[in-house]
Length: 307
Length: 285
Image (cartoon, rainbow over all chains, first blue to last red; front, side):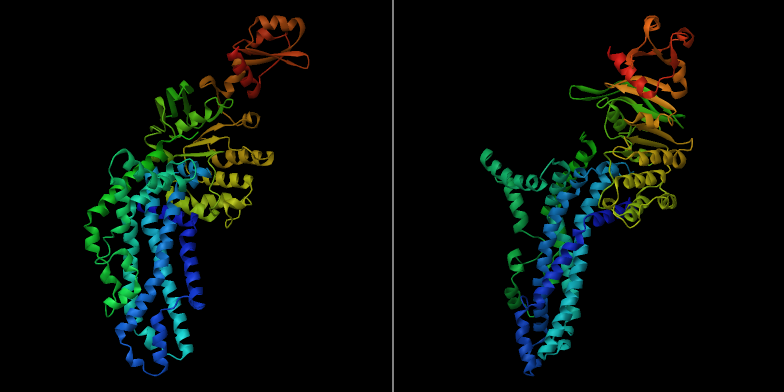
């Protein structure tokens, strides 16, 4: 079962090259943007200026850490958004393409059950995409810190002091937080992952439309037919309540200025609340919904006779 | 157990259509069984039932397993190539071999490498870069490298040119078939496989019209080319089918002693294709 799953997930990575091409493309664009000056932590501009006039000791270590953290986080958010979009497209394609290109009968001629196949797609969404994206993020962070060091050096600042003195602590904090968040986000949004997989296994055409239309139409129908908002509320609340982050509203979480103000040295890790996440009934309820959709996907792949 | 496939009263219905209608047969170990039938005869449905891809009524046992409910176990000992079961186009040959090695307990990587080294298939190529003939060679090499007890081929050579088709069946016999393994095959190009079959089964409208060992065909079926008064006399012996060829009558007889036909014309054993037409038309008449 486990070596099987490894081979199956590896196959997903072979087939869907976008799994690593997407984060790699984001990394490339972000690096180019950094090089052309579109993104640059504004705090650093000041620090560099201070450094140049020879008053480097004015900036406290916490401030440098906060500046670095804010920069890396703003940078990382783009990857997180890209990986969310990637996950949607991957899930919708994963059980649809094999039917479209008729390779499904080849895969089904091997001693692999439909359940194992669908589980491998879930593992890809829950583990492979976050881990691959994380590795690219970490590599991009390092490349960009090096580029910034060169930039600061050219400006006359001291990159060793401004970046690398704080970097180990900051990177440990940011990387741990990013990896945990990347792993928790798909779990939190698991009902959608299950739903997309089911649509991918079930729909005869246009999976994108078949997946998204009901997300808008069903809540509306519910309001018209019954005077309730249950489904709409369930969908909406996934985007407004994130139990993996403590004490922050999702919107605030990405507000760099607020983060800069509220703490001396920001720790991203301090915003992550694993306990709250793991004890969140909504998270577990979501996983159950995901399981139901995944079971339906297995059932469709197993029993539908398409000839 | 010598019976690899055992079907009794197997039926499969799609809404109002009986695709397979109360079919019973056995396939023994070491046979090469040809399943012959026109389009829509129920061949593919029957194969799908054997492969556990579709459920059916009646008793069907393949390698002693219920194909639909014990599919994973079945698939360790059964292989199939179908014109519709295409290899994924995005995969590299080496990736495919790696994947097979990791997931199939009876797959021999060395054997596959050896078989592929005899072809022009490049290991680093993607399937989409190979010609249709090469894809089939690749597929057959992979299947041959699986130590499976039953191989099911559904129109395996569809769309291939004659050279590849001949080579396919040549390789099938020399590399795959060893007397221990069993092959179940369907194709429209009957002439090309009739020499390699040991058994034959005709199916039409979901029913089995004929099931025989190839060796037994000459004992049961005779084709007589005749004309004029001889034709009139031959007709009284009850041919199952009659057709005109170059102004002569060609009649197919079932279960009529060759001695009775002596002197009435030129008697010989019908080809599988002609026999098939005779049986289908004869059944319809």
